[in-house]
Structures are given as structure tokens and as C-alpha cells.
Length: 351
Image 1 (cartoon, helix red, strand yellow):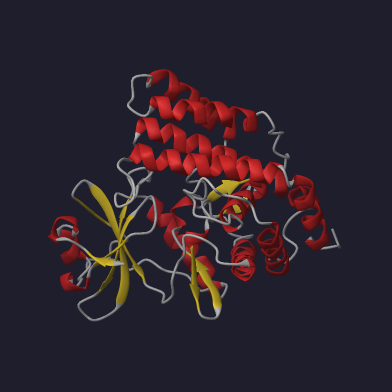
Image 2 (tube, helix red, strand yellow; image 1 turned 90 degrees about the vertical axis):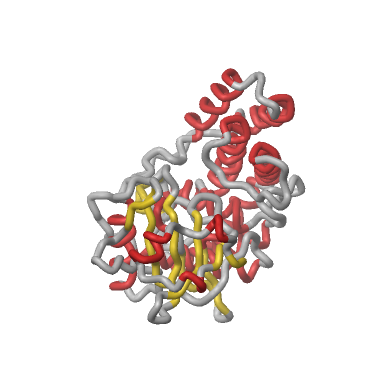
């Protein structure tokens, strides 16, 4: 975290609405979507303030309130919304939606340090999924179709056609051509019922403390999706040996095994045999899908945040992310048989 420069502080109306101590605000640099600050209320309560990304409607906060209440009732640790002084779940100001959450002590990480941490992540997500197995809110599908890989590949094709004069086009085009070879390897997603999922279970959305994984955070993405794609998204993040924007990305089988074992132990037999067997291919699929999304945004520059300290432009950072996911897809494709054997060793034998 870092102290927020004056020009990056939330509007005074937001600070007043949530009764925050302005001097306590510290910008949290991690995360690609919502702008986030650690803060304290004037009464000293530790909280997290967020300016919700415009891709989400204000009503997403109703879903966050419902799911966090459900998780808390099941005995899981979770951040929860803190209403404004007038009792609202969110506050609208400066053409944006703002909210406050309880702050849970711990830390997040952009990468997994070892197999043990991957196992902890697997247990945390397994507990999360098991607790939400009976969660049925009306607003549960806030991001329907987020893992429609074919749609993301088509969007990349359209972006390439529409932005041929973009400054980054010459750098993006050969990455897109290489990605096509990996996309050609994709098979169909198994026809299994969609389940309630987190929607973005990358490692930076899991909070840790000295005892292990504490909880999942950033619940705006909650929705319904095939469970194999949710876990494929998790595994491509947890099992990568490098940063998400490193071209040296590879999938580590030891981390994959620890994550699968942890998830199997904590998910209470939730998955079907078909869902278990689909996990290696789903991990490959999500790497391909994310590479396509990053390349699209390198040209359209409208969705993902970027690190201004390390990259000259959003396009440059998103190209690096795309190259990393392409490398991860290649690494995963080369290990599919071995990863399948790992899954078979650890899935519950009663299935």
C-alpha cells in the first residue's frame, strides 16, 4: 500500500458519506479492476473503500451483501459491506459507485510462492464453493458468459480488424497469430450444470495470514458458470511459476497437485467425475482465453488496469500479460496427460 496523492483521493462527499478519517486513506495498488483504499472510520474501525469499476452496475452490491451474509452464516470469514451514515449499501458520487467493506487483517499476493500456498488456495476455494452450493439469490448471474472463450476469440478478431492503425498493432498481431495455434487445440466444455462461482479466483483475490488462506475477496464477479472453468481460472493463476505478466510463465505440476489435493479435501465431494476430468483442459482453455482478452484490451484500452511504474502504456502491459498467458497455455498443453493423472489420484474415489 502507499499513501494516496491528493489528486487520487476519493471525493470529499464520499469520505463524509462513509464517515472516514481522510488522513488514514492509503491506496492499495494490487488489482486490475476496482480502485481501492485501506482506511479507518473516524471511530477507528479498519475498512476498505472501493470505487467500483463501471463495468459493474450499482446493484452488484446487493449481490455482494447477499453472498457475504450467506458465507458468514456458514461460519466462513468474509468481508462485509459497511453502510453509509444514512444506511445505504453504496454511495454514488463523481460519476461512480463507491462502497465500504470491513477490513480483514492479512495480505494478498500476485504470485504463489510454493506448493504449500497453492494447497491453501485450493482449500479456501473448496470451502467457498461448498458453502455456496445452496446459495440461490435472484441476482446470482452478474457476469453471464464471462468464460465464453469463442466470444473472446471473436472479439480479438474484431479488434484486430478495427485497429490496424493502432500504435501497438504490429506488436499485437504476431502474438495473436501464435495464440491461434493454441486455440485450435481447444475441445468442447463438458455439458455440466452451471454452478455458483467466484468468477475471478486468481491468487490475488485470496487473503492470507500466518495460519494460511483466510477468505476470498472481490466478490463482484460472483455468478453461474461451469465449475471446470472456475477451477481452470484458479489453477492457471496458482500454478504459474512467474508473475502474470512474465513471458517465462510455466505451469508447475507440483503446485497443480497441491491445489487439487487441497480443493478435493475441502469441497465435500461437490464435483462430478466429469468436472474433475475436465480440469486440465480447462486450465489450458482459460490461459488461451485470457491471452485473447489481454490482446483485445491492448488495442481497445478500455478494461484492464495497468502498472504505470513498469510499463509505458496500457497496451504494453497487456501485451506482456498476453505473452505470459500464451506461454502458460503452451506449458499446460504439453502436460495435459500428467495433469490428468494428478486429478485422478486426488479426486474423491466415491464418485
